[in-house]
Amino acid sequence: MRNSLVLLSAIISFAACKSDKKHKSSEDATKATIEQQAIKKIDVHAHYKYERDYLADFFKKWNMQGVLVDVSIADSVGVNRSWKEYLDHVKTEPDLFYLCSSLIGVGIDNPDFAQKSIEKLEQEIRSGARMVKVWKNFGMVTKDASGKFIQIDDSRLQPIWDFLKERKIPVMAHIGEPVQAWRPLDDPNNPHFGYYTDHPEYHAYQHPEIPSYEMIITARDNWIENNPGLKILCAHLGSMSHDVDMVAKRLDKFPNIYVEPAARFGDLVGQDSDKVKAFFEKYQDRILFGTDYGTSSPQTEKTAGELKGEEQNLEESYRRLWTYLSTADSLALRGQKNRGLALSEQVLKKFYYQNTADFLKLN
Ligand SMILES: [Zn+2]
Image (cartoon, rainbow, N blue to C red; front, side, top):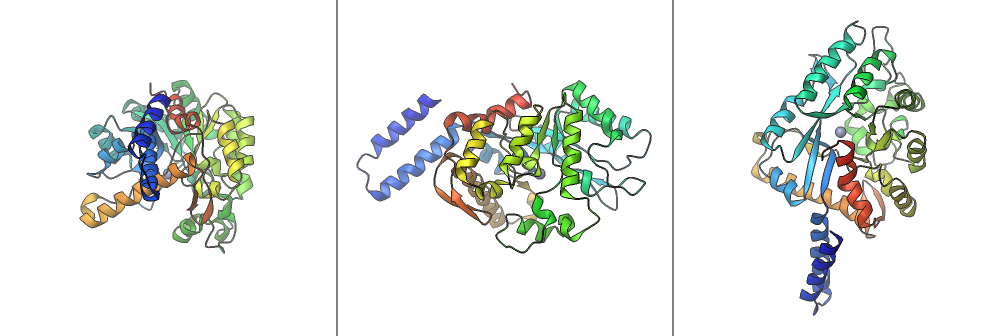
C-alpha cells in the first residue's frame, strides 16, 4: 500500500506542478483524502442504532467497517437495549458491520443470574456477537439487594467471565468515567463539560453516594488481574484518558488488555503531542480505533436538511480525528488546542484496522 500511496502522490504532484498557493492547498487536500481512504478502517466502538440512507456509502467512502456496540440500560420498565436494531442493521449490511452484545448486573442476587446471562450471551454469540460490552452501570449505577453498587470484580459474575474465556469472546469494558466526573464542572473548556451538563446523573461530583474514582478503577484492575485469560478492550482509554502514563502502566502490567480512545480524543489533544505520539508508537499493537459515533433517532423523524447536516457532521468528525492522527497540523478538539501526532503509515494501519481485525479474529 505504501507503493500505491507514493504513486498516487506522484500523480497528484505531477498534475499540480504549476500550482500557485491556492492550487497547492487543494493538492494537499486531495492527497490527504486519497491517503485517508487508502487506509482500511474499523470503528470498533460505534452506535449506529438507526439506519440511514447515506450510511453504507459513507462507510464505503471512508474504507471503513463498524462494530455496533450494544448498551444495556435499566429504566423503570426494564432493561433497554439496541440489540434488535443492530441485528437488523447487520442483516442488511453484513459486509459493513459486526456485533457486540452487552451485559448488565440487574438481578444479580437471583441464584440463576449467571446461568441465565450465559444462556442469553450464548444465543447472541450464535447470532453473530463477537464481543460483549460491560458499561459504567457496573460500579456507578446498578445496586444489588443489599443496596451496594455492583463492582465489576463481583464474584457472582465470575462464571460469565469463565464462559467468555472458554468461548474466546472478548469483553469491551467501559468501567468508570473520566476523572473529571468526580470534580466540579467549572471550566467550559473541560473536554467533558458538555457531556456532564447534559447527563448530570453521571457527574459523580453531584452524587456522593457513587463510589470514588479510585475504588471503581481498583475493582476494574482486580477484575483484569483475576482473569488473565480473558481478552479485555478497555473502552475510552480505560477511563484514564487524562493521563496516558496511567494507561501505559496498565498496558505494561496486564498483557490481556487493549484500549480504544472513543470520545476521549479531547483528553489526548490536551496532553503533550510528543508524549501522546510516543504512547501510540510504543503500544502500536494494542490501541484500537473507536469513536462512539452513531445515530440516536429514526430516519423518519428527521428532515432532509437535518440528515444532510448529520452526514456532514459525521464527515467532519472522522476527518478531524484523521487530521489529528496523521498530520502535524494545528487543530482544536473539545476545547483543547494542539498539533496533530503525524503517526507513521505503519502505526495508522495497525490502529485503524489491523489491531481490531486481530482482536476480534475477523480474518
Ligand atoms: Zn459508547
